[in-house]
Amino acid sequence: MADNIFVFKVLFAIFIFNLKLFLFSNNCLMKVIKLILVFLQMTLLMISCKEPVKKQILTTNKANYLNKGKSIAQATQLVLGKNLINAIETKGITNALEFCNEKAIPLTDSMAIVKNASVKRVSDKNRNSNNFANDLELEYINQAKIEIEKKGSAKPKIIEDNNQVITYYPITSTAMCLKCHGNTQTDIDSKTLKMIKTKYPKDKAVNYLSNELRGIWVIKMDK
Image 1 (cartoon, rainbow, N blue to C red):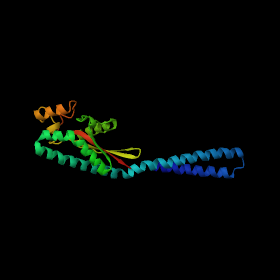
Image 2: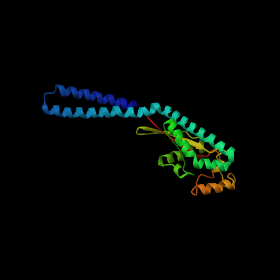
Image 3: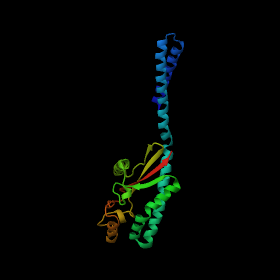
Image 4: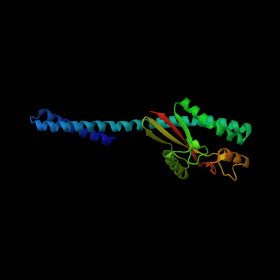
């Protein structure tokens, strides 16, 4: 930002100097040359003014967007968690699998409407085909895995996309997650595993360990 201000001051000083030369010059050719230079410098001034403002918008509000996105992700997780626990307490783990298969995405979409944002969960090892991460999301997933391995946790990420802000938040596996996403030999019972294979023939979301990155929240918000 400081560098841009310095460039602006230098360009503005040169602009004023050339403008004076243009106004007080008697030579027609010199006037034309100076007019061209003045025009070019005005263009550079406009560019140097606009660029830092665009960057500053995101920098100033970065914390606000991250907090807002986190709040949306947590609220959605709370709704999904309550319904999932209720499904388990009612009919067991297989019923929870039914819930995830039929109601998880519609509930997430409903929260998106309530929060006026785009809300989704994605993974590099997805169970539902609609939850596979795109290239940008995979980039964050790989970064988050490294952070969790080294530090035990991963920081969220924020990017700017035209008139939207996109935030990413890690989802790590818990003991309850492992009942459907853990080791296929020791964590997931045979009845549940059979149902997973029936409902998700191309399932990749198994053999996770506790506190391992299982996916991410992706929250898109308008600026």
